[in-house]
Length: 164
Image (cartoon, rainbow, N blue to C red):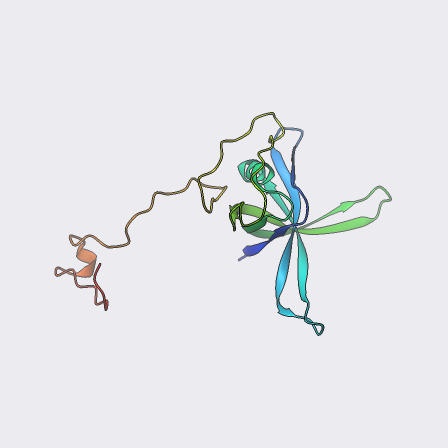
């Protein structure tokens, strides 16, 4: 299994670009604080390279900026290429499947700043709160089972110390 979940802050403003076939993508780095402080009492951070594609890239480029706290879900991918001098270079990055706001724009000290996604279109603003970029937000539903549901027996008793 290859799954990564990170929460951190963008180190610079993300910029959405397009491939030759007009597929949007966005390379960015997030600073993720380590859990513990060093000997001097300072909290260290790891700087993680990430890439997002299509609507996730457009979302990040349009609504997030340097310093924004972001939550991402994705997978680690390692690739290699030959640079201009013929040396083999290796790149390890997180390929982002989902991205979410982690704090409100008021908490980050700056308002949202819609930018284009490279083709002149600005997507509509997302609803308030946390927004996943890769899938539409499902309506809230009750977790209470239907009392007609035979999976819990005929009497509807779930054996919980409280009632729904």
